[in-house]
Length: 207
Image (tube, rainbow, N blue to C red):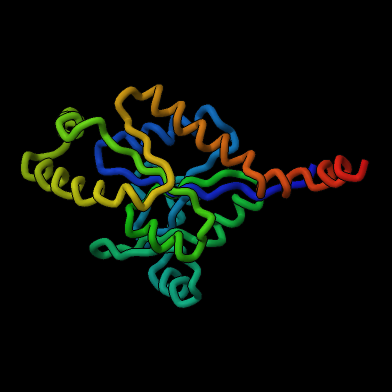
């Protein structure tokens, strides 16, 4: 059996839609899926490890990577830089692993321009009221922050039609099953099977 490349998935959603819970549950049940680890120039927080939460880099090294076109996408947030390394992604894909990029619609556009085969999944809440309730149930945001997050969510959700698959996260287990089905279906696409079973196909057609 020949080694085939994994698939690159872009996962986007407004805050509170349950995106992180879904991909963490998927990774826990599917050993072929990985989450992309970004580079950042901010220092590690307590309990964080290099290569697990982030690849921690010096500012000069990060700027050199930008100059070398080493990122799919990057951004400066306040005083720190964040970016998705092409090589880190390609290394995982070459191992036949599926990789999730958890990014917003703007980052998704940058990735698709450079990697057209990327598969986009957008997570929607079942209603704005449910989304607002989830944000409030966290108990971590002020009223002002919640209002701002809701306004941003509407803007983000307006880009749902730029994605290949839409999952409405009403019932968690149903949403997880739908996400799992997408990943499994992409592994049996013609292009993937031709890569993975070249010898088998040639043998079958030579009878």
